[in-house]
Length: 211
Image 1 (cartoon, helix red, strand yellow):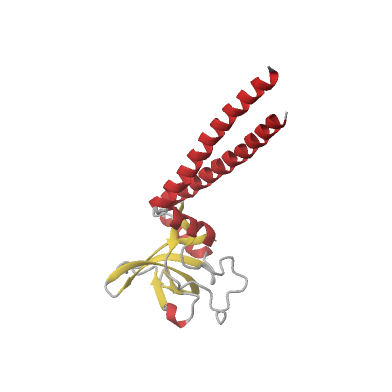
Image 2 (cartoon, helix red, strand yellow):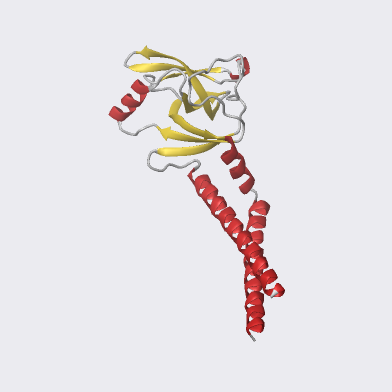
């Protein structure tokens, strides 16, 4: 009987391992699915990984009361994208507030780059808006101005940041490395094989016990 109990205990341990491995693979799959959204759009939302420290919070910069207070390097951000229709774009501008975080493209040193910074000031410019943005890391972050009425401007707003997760961003960056993902799959496969082997052993022990 002792061997039967040991066999059952071993099977339970392996079942726990297989459950853990399955959950790990499910989490990895979900994160990789989220990664596919990066640089693309789904239902009016997009995602990006922030690779600059300009939005890491400086204690001297007051951002109290804002939903997005700190965006460390390698954070995942979810962006409510700028609508395509002009009337919806105007509504998007009207709802902007000081303290909102925007992702936008900006011309710097002859090169177009994508930046995520906080709205510092919103003013009117003809029939459009003049939006001043700056990073939270202080003077080193720099200041940008987007004039929505300037048709010739090479700067444009991509969207508003509505969610930020440093943990998910780091996980995505790790899973981007093929060796790590292969290791996760290998561990899951090993757990499955061990479960099958243990299950077979437990059945054999049970049969001998009945005899």
